[in-house]
Length: 63
Picture 1 (cartoon, one colour):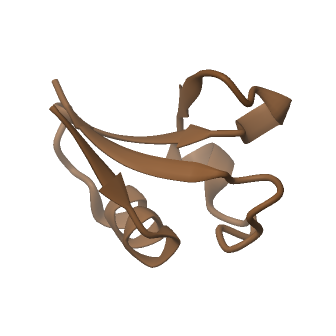
Picture 2 (cartoon, one colour):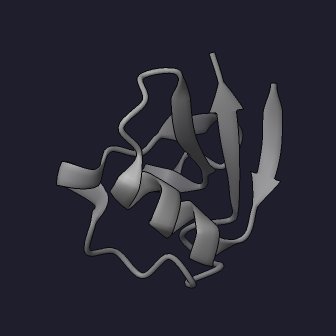
């Protein structure tokens, strides 16, 4: 299941996610404007989640 997320909630869920079945995904990450990429807190805690040119869209995925 995929749920659209605003940047504020994407960052909060990414920070406090302790479940392996929840994934915060981003379209536009690393200039990949067609596919969604999984975000990992250790690697992605400092970027500006509100920059619409880099982070086009967030989704919460349930696996």
